[in-house]
Length: 408
Image 1 (cartoon, rainbow, N blue to C red):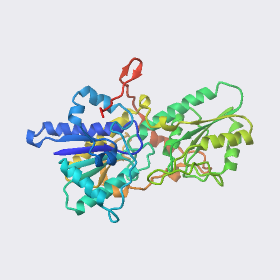
Image 2: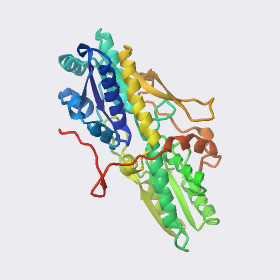
Image 3: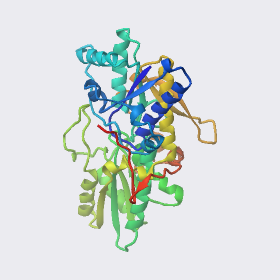
Image 4: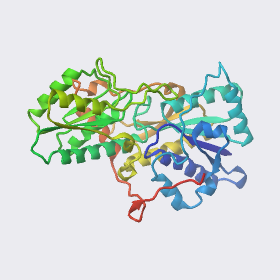
């Protein structure tokens, strides 16, 4: 058998762990069978775009050294590269589908694994449905990833735990930095999250270690009022000399537009600037010392603060995807299911149709947002806490982390 695996969408700390899971699961199964039934695994550079260009790498050769496998597991971002490529509707034009099918057949690929988020599951759903209509035995399996944690049908997504750990620890350091002066101040931290506030909400984790910050948390799921924001900040300043605000990049302002107007291939707006907008607003309306901090892309690939639980589960998701393919399933997305009936945190792997997760956003629960819309409840902290457990020690050289890189 031959497998092909590609990565798509925004990078994370854990997406390569899923790649490792697919590779190692296939290698282990190959060792149990005769030579004629061995499983070969090929990486595809730059997602579907690379597939169309037949840009493959034989992973058995590239990862022949076990130390490279371990290094890849701990390396952030997409080692195979990525893309943001929207598959057209097969009903309108299926020429691209025919080309992909020809390439997969030409290279004797039995199963194609796509590691990605909402938009990548759109590709999995469309391609698998078209192949099935053609009577093709080629299977297509989706492996979830996204720091936004906004995929439906899964308790959480691989990559989110590490991003939440980085955001919480960075916010804690911001708290320490901002508290050294006696001058009243406001610090606004802009955190990723286009349509869902999971990552911004995870800043509540600081309270697990006795912090009171962040004092205000604003998510896209709540109505945001500029006037109410100023009132919230003024009230917080009555009790705290240094006020820390966590703000999602995707909040919608009443009557104000701070966005660039540009969109990606899937029609998603490029977001940035809410922190600076609110900084200027506080300076104008309150007049105190104020700064905004945009954590930006560091939230995605801070492997030096990766969650061990996240990498372990991400690798497990890749391994489970191989099991689904060997069972003959296609058009499925791997899911992580939390055992809510146990006092101990436990996760089981399952699956659902990728079509059900494609282009759908799982928003932060309204029940976990306080009545004022400026904070989250203790239920949120309990949900987040298991996802950031454990540390991953990077491989170091010359005082710096070493990352795995494929020769392209």
